[in-house]
Structure formats: structure tokens, C-alpha cells
Image (cartoon, rainbow over all chains, first blue to last red; front, side, top):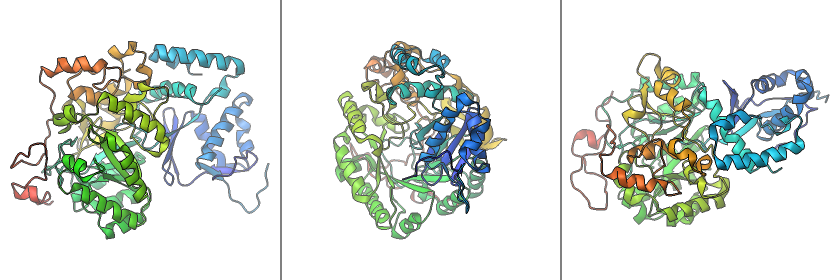
Length: 96
Length: 51
Length: 401
């Protein structure tokens, strides 16, 4: 059972997930769970790829226009729920 | 919303369902965006053409 | 607002639009590794039995795996014939897995002894699917041949014993086994396996037995209800989306024809078809032995471009059920002689029935490739494992490369 999604934490793409670019965005396939997801926006794909570079999800969303943040948060929550993105593990986990 | 894609599937059934959706969305909507699904999961065995 | 139905009707148009541009690669695909088979099932969609002399060599197979890896194909469904008949099967399996291409292989259980079962249980990214078409020896063997039920069950025992969790048991639904749905579920539970039921298509040898074996209209309703009751626990390979018009609840799956859009078939000689149920020149996209290989066929084949841009429908578009059933299965229509822009032969509204009567008069399309074992004796109503007539029949790999 995955932990609830917390935008104040840092996340990253699960190494067990293959992200394949497509005209509409990307396909994400989790080799461990065999779950498959359509990511239906190229911006979302960039966001997911770059997640690991930010201290927390909220930071990563800083460049996203206000009106879109809610949609992206839902998308990220869905990805977290299916183990496609996972909390960053770090020794000093300081939430944003 | 991708209303334009419905043009390809002009069926009575879909039409009546979209009317329902439009009503629901009307309540929420100025962003409308809150209804968008950017992530959609499909079973790896959920595609026809595989025996 | 509920998340259910509105999401369903939202989903279908959106994804169909995405596919029009063509995906970078299939999401998954069926790859038949040989036409050789130890069995002679009555409904074999690939008309398998005898090895083709021109089958891809080990080296060629590995090159295909390399291509699939480069294209990031996530997953291949390996079948045949009986894929484990190839002496290089285990080598190829390991090679695919090591190349980050997941494999599910479909087998009648021939080579799955205890040792191999243990090996498989310890291998990641490999799924095993055992074919079974009856929950009793009598029903199963009538279609798959004498001894096939026992062979399948033995393989299941070995897999369960070896700790292979969630292997698949895949059943083709026929008039004679719809009444055994609960029994199939019990067999799956017994072995810790996952049940998968699929649609009988009039493809390959299936064309010869379709009329007598395909489920009745009443049985289709039974299948639909049973699937709804069992939710996500039972897999279907999305092969029953034509039944969605029977009710408000949609069977889980993409619910549209994936041929040439998200899936395709690679056959044992490297020919690429739209799907495994459509092995016929009409649905042949090309050959991966041509320059550019598989990638070139996937990206540029005119057949695929046509399948991706075509909005299916035709005569079906005016039917209230169209958004649920999408006009059904292209292969089912083709091999029963029905027009592709018309109803499915098993249209739940009955629109296909009159078409079938009309089509019966003319000649039906036949698969050009027939690798069936040569028959020495005709067993009326009871197909048996054929007695081999030539050395290459007894040892499908007698001519080794």
C-alpha cells in the first residue's frame, strides 16, 4: 500500500518505470507491477522526468501556470498511487 | 475538454451521455480543467489483438 | 459527479485521437516463434502444426529482440504453434528478458517440467500462460486433442509447486465450455493462477469450426454477466468489447480494436500482420526481413496508416450501441465473409446474423498459410494428435539451422 501523496515531499520517477515518448505525451510502464499508464500531456512528461531534480513537488510545479497546477497534482497523485513515482530517499529530508 | 473529438463518434448514446456530462461540468466549471484526466491507466492485458 | 460512466465516454474518443498519429512502437505485440506444434487444436488461429522451413534463425530472432528493445516495446506475447518446441526457446527467453523486453509466453505445457518451472519461477519479467479450453478432460480434449488436458494440468501443478504466482490460464470460450466458467475459476484458484478468457475467432482452422463452436447469443449474455461479476480478477485481452452493448457496465480494457494501432503480430517467418487473428494477405503490413526491419514496417506500412486513420463504423455508426461495441472485430467479420464496415458476426443486437446468411453462399476468405499437420485419418468429431507422416512432422525441428 503506497503512502499518501504529499506535494511537500520530493519525488522521482521510479527506476522500474520505462517512460516512452509518444506524440501525445508518453507511455509509462512499470516492469515490476506490469501497470501501464498513458500520460496525455507532454508538459506532464517533462514534469515527471524532472521531478527528481526538485526538493519537493511544489517546487517542481512552480513553473506551471496557476490554473493548471491542480490538474498536474491530480496526475502526479495518480502516478504515486500506482508506484510510478516514488518519494526521494535522502538523508536530510526537509519538506518544503 | 476535448469536445472536438466527439465529432468523430456521433452516436445517440454518446450524445446523451455528453449532455449529462455537460450539465455536471457546468456546475464546476470555469476552469473545466479540473475534469481533465491527464493520466489514464490501462491493463497491459487490456488491448485487443493479443492471444 | 461520479467517476464512472462519464470517464468511460471521455476516454474512448481521446485515445482514438492519440492513435491517429501512430504510436512510436506497439505497446505490446504478439510474436509467434514457430509454426511447429505438438498439438492440432481444432480452432488454431495460426493453422499451426508443421515448422515452416523459412523460420527466423536464432540470430535473426535476437536481432528482432534488439529492435524491440531500441523501440522500447515493453512486452511481447510469445506464442506459435508451441514456442517451447524451438530448441533455442530458453536462450531467446533469457535474451529478451536481459534486454528489458518483458515476455509472456503462451504454451500447451509441453516442456514445463518441474525443473523448468522452478527456473521460470525465479525469473523476473516472464509470465507464463497455459492454454486450456475445457475444465474437464472431455470438453478440453475434444478441441485440443487426446492427452492435452493432462499435459496442461501437469504443467500447472509444476508451476504452482515451483512458487510461480499468478501464471495465466487462458481459455477460448466455446459453446461447450461457457457452462464451465465457474469451474475454470476454481482451477485457477487451485493453482494460484489468474484466469483469462478470450473470444473464439473464425481465424486459421477456427474458420472450419466457428459455426459449430462459437457461443450462442444467450451464452454471450452469460459471458458478459459473468465478466462483470468478476471485475478485474479475470483477464480478457480485451477480446469481448463487442459485448459491451449488452449493458451499461463496460468490461475493463481499452475497448477498441488494437490492430495496427497498439498491437500487431510478428509471425515465425518475419511477416508482420495487423493482429494474430488476421493472418491473411489483406492484413499483412510487410516483412521485417525487408530493409528497415520491424521499425520501418510499424512506422510506414500503408496498411497500418490506413488502420490508424480510419474511423471505423460504416453501417454501424447509426446504431445506438456503436459507442459501446465500436463495430466489433475486423478479423471476425473478414473470415465470416462480412463487410468490414458492417456488423460483427456476433453483434449482440443481431445485426450480423442476416449478413452471415448472405455470406454463406459465396466463398469465404481462407488463410494462405496453412501449417497444419497432414492428416492420416479423419476422426469424426474428435480431433486427435496427428500421426506424423514425414520426419519433419515428428521432429518439427528436424532441419536445424
